[in-house]
Amino acid sequence: MKKVVITGAANGIGRATVIACLEAGFYVIAADKDETGLNALLRELRTESLEVHVADFSRDEVFKSFIPSLFETYGHESLYALVNNAGLYHGKSVYDYTDEEIDEIWSLNLKSLVYLSKDFARQTAVADASRCIVNVTSVAGEVGSFDALYGATKAGVIGLTKANAWNFAPKVRVNAISPALIHDTSIYHRIPDHRRKEYERQEILKDPIYPQGVADVIMFLLSDQSRHLTGKIIPIDNGAYPR
Figure 1 (spheres, rainbow, N blue to C red):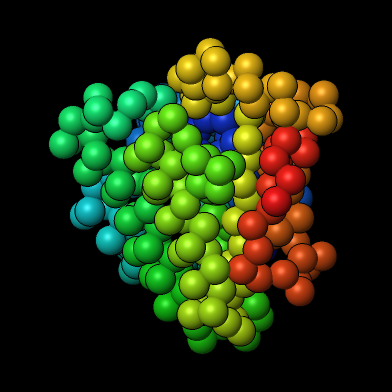
Figure 2: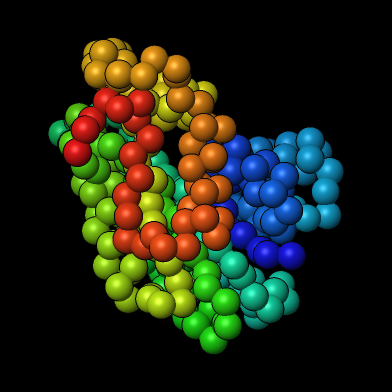
């Protein structure tokens, strides 16, 4: 059974991806700082194919040790995929950020991906079969954001995705999804009202995007159907931002 690590797994896109992976027959290692949300997943899904870890990926000591611990402490012999989904969005001006908030969003949205990705690639380098990483960036990393720190870190995820596609080839494929306005997520209600309306105005497909729709694209990138793709950024935006 292939094992998939999903960060930010308790809610929104992460939660939908956990469910989709389980339905596809994967063993899922779900990590999030939201212990209540993880426990709710366990109660709802009731499967031996789900393992949960309470982990705050804004903390250096967590993201630097997490992947090695899965092998050394929890006895996993191999991992097939890593979905870097955990992230933070405040939806406020750069002038309103505290020093602590800047450090936190930088660590969670970008720095943690550096360590999780390289540790995953290093641990799987000896594997015979190919492996894959899927990063969750944002349209804000491509076209900018009112929240400058969010936009900057998500732009960094795009750069990291392309660089790591080179660094980890040929054993590990690295791609990213770039969602726009996704309903039923923690981010949705933090987006300033005028920005939400602007996103909606620019969508040329009018079927609202929910986490399950994003999970569908992640599942494609985890599957053998995407075996010829690496270093790609896949927009999920109802056609709002042709690029």
